[in-house]
Length: 208
Image (cartoon, rainbow, N blue to C red; front, side, top):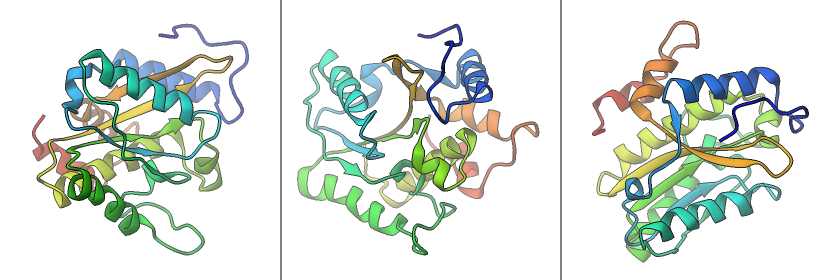
């Protein structure tokens, strides 16, 4: 994984963003996901941003993670620009509309139609849609974690809901990190980084 800041970061990726990601890694908030954590023996419902430059790498990494422990590569994909940070009740509107309910309905089709019991939410950075919506890296992850809490609450029969962050450092260097919910909650509730939303506080009572 990248340790030294590249000479040229991609457009929309600031030095402050790089420093934040390094800090999250140092604190154990971000780490390489272990295949067993997915518990995806029936497939996955990936929630992705339909980014033409990064989606292929996100999908390839998820597929490789599943193959490592012989989970089927069986994605029931929910993709829309900014989808990972549009699942929360606190998410921004798009064209004056809230689309969170539509995305949640799409997620439900995974277990209902395909018996797929694992949801994987993957915000990515840098993200053009986040820029359009004036959403920072911290807020993007926070909204994704809000979405995770909501899915767990509204679809309690799911076997697993996992959140990851995909990072494009430029020049083909891309990595996907698992977001540790307990450590993220501790990080985001620190007064230096902001105040958690009510749905984030729900994470404290979720099985870890």
